[in-house]
Length: 361
Ligand code: ATP
Ligand code: MG
Image (cartoon, rainbow, N blue to C red; front, side, top):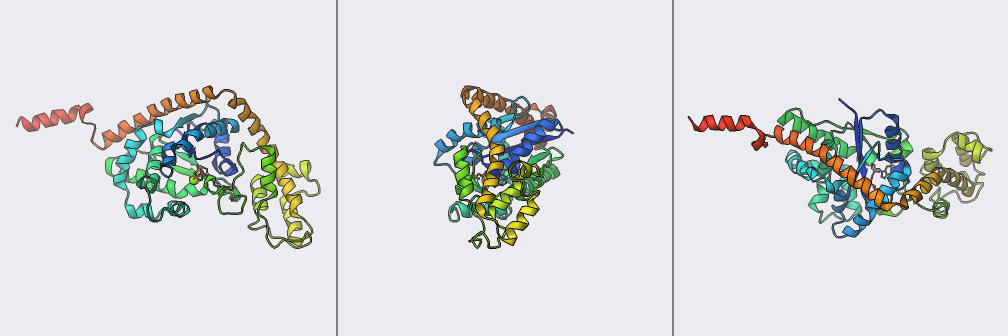
């Protein structure tokens, strides 16, 4: 059986560094590795509407922003299929059947959904669509028979739930669906990149992001005002690197060669950390180093984005063709699902023959 990737992002804003280290960078590497038979990248607009029902314009405006970010990062539409979730109606039908396989209490236990409900102040009135989005996500993944989902740590409970649904379905109706595996970043700092404010997760909804399309000046401002160690007041004070966002970002982005290029006083991150912990190293210097590293990463992304921005109709065309291709694949899986569930009445000659015999005595 082939290796297939499905992954995606909600069009609730432009993509940020958290997306990049959590999933996007990996997708590009895997796309170019040639090890995967198919790669599907989904702009999850229907999922984004589950908590933005009253703001459809936000979702509409961000479709192109996310698509541009993909192309800017090196997602190649000739190698990967980029599509829009709402344009693949088959996904809704799958979700409708999967709902029978999941209990309310199982959904309530999903830790990511729990946190997100709190974040959105949904405690007293959770939209049913939002509450059940892990089921819809299971449809997205299984519709493409995905074996692999490159994603950040927050997605682990979703993939676990998708696996359970696939297993339950196969147990009842026979072997039909593929159980997906999550592919987490191998670097701990990238599993859940914190926001520039030091908060648990960089997230569009929290406004603590460095966006892939931010200008050089915006990135500089974001880095210079980043949360560090609040007790590291004077340069000579010993500083903490744990929980210090600038060092977490260095863990995520710094490569050994960056020292020779931008800060030859040190030869490794460990050496830099040791000096900071001893005292005598100011935050501004470390931030400038991080800024140089981020600029090296973001400059080519920014430039590629500018190129694609010149031809927006071409980007929409990529999305349209991708959505058509995705729809054909999902329809195929849905046909298998219907047949396994014994609801394929009209293309089941056996059923008609059997019923005829029954009534003719
Ligand atoms: P929203 O606030 O609308 O939920 P988000 O910023 O959390 O947006 P998503 O579209 O939900 O972004 O996430 C898309 C992908 O990016 C997922 O694979 C997720 O794990 C990954 N991701 C998002 N934020 C981070 C982060 N801070 N660190 C690592 N991975 C992340
Ligand atoms: Mg999210």
